[in-house]
Image 1 (cartoon, rainbow, N blue to C red):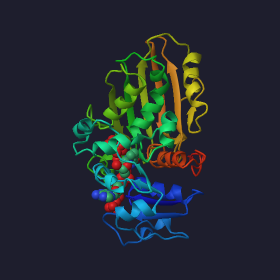
Image 2 (image 1 turned 90 degrees about the vertical axis):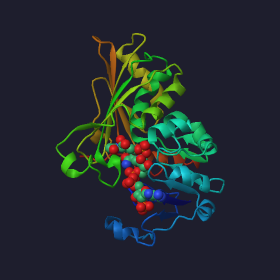
Image 3 (image 1 turned 60 degrees about the vertical axis):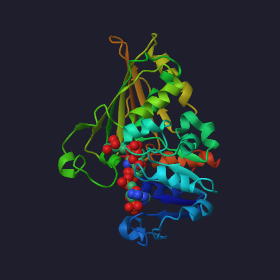
Image 4 (image 1 turned 45 degrees about the vertical axis):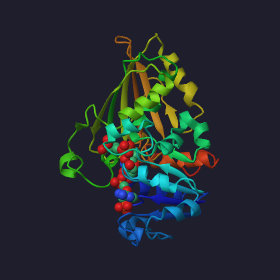
Length: 345
Ligand SMILES: NC(=O)C1=CN([C@@H]2O[C@H](COP(=O)(O)OP(=O)(O)OC[C@H]3O[C@@H](n4cnc5c(N)ncnc54)[C@H](OP(=O)(O)O)[C@@H]3O)[C@@H](O)[C@H]2O)C=CC1
Ligand SMILES: CC(=O)N[C@@H](CCC(=O)OP(=O)(O)O)C(=O)O
């Protein structure tokens, strides 16, 4: 299988290269760059020197869509909305890591991303690539909208209770924290080392672009769901996301019934691990892996459920989830090439 990575010099692209390089079905990987075509990738990132070298290529959509089997777009918002129409309709499957193809309502995308949306024909074709919840549609897809990092953690944590109609519709609060690699390779005033280290800050309060993505999926599971409160914080660590989720139930459940609801959905899922009662995950438990670990409990005083969901933002939140989607599309075993265990400590 021949794979191409657009945006290969970015954090998501680099992780894709690392994963695809170890994927047994991938025979060639072509890297594309909009700003450094002609340069050797290994000169820019010497840590990747090895048996193979990669010259960064210019984007030629007409050739790419026929020559490649799968194209990953690891580009900033606003790029794949323009590029996907040029790459569609050929031989290659497209997996977009950005937010451009996730939100079905073009005007909602424009409102939250402050950019022009992809054409409706593209949005209609794009399948939301959350494998644990959308496997069948992913298997038939030509274009995948890979979920956002925060939505992956939030939705895997909320899915079983919302899908079962157990959550009071107006009670959802998602309090999320991310490491700085979530913002990509270029520092900005928020993520600059001098500002971010020894600091803990909330950002994009009530205006984070992942809010409509989370609400879109929740309302597919349960149409009467109300808007959610979703807050994001920057933590001075390189990678990792923790979403601490609070919901109220509309019926009483015991701890066992609560855990069983999650187990029913996730025991057959290779990358979601639900903790025993009293155990809660931290970000290092999934560092460098495709796992989402979930811990949960009910507060008998407030009747509120606390769900803790952790992922590696660059992996289950981006690159490895994209490879999981590729495996499903091409009918490889879902775990192929996704090295099973986290890096610890
Ligand atoms: N970082 C994370 O944890 C996550 C990121 N995402 C999303 O994935 C995408 C990639 O993220 P990330 O890797 O962190 O971002 P980076 O900023 O690290 O990298 C993006 C890359 O895109 C390329 N690029 C920039 N402009 C263009 C353009 N006009 N056309 C083609 N390529 C361009 C650049 O490479 P070059 O100049 O060589 O072309 C750049 O290296 C983003 O949309 C992001 O929001 C999603 C989930 C998690
Ligand atoms: C730490 C940090 O800044 N994280 C980014 C994640 C952005 C992202 O992944 O954006 P899309 O999913 O919309 O492509 C943020 O909160 O905006």
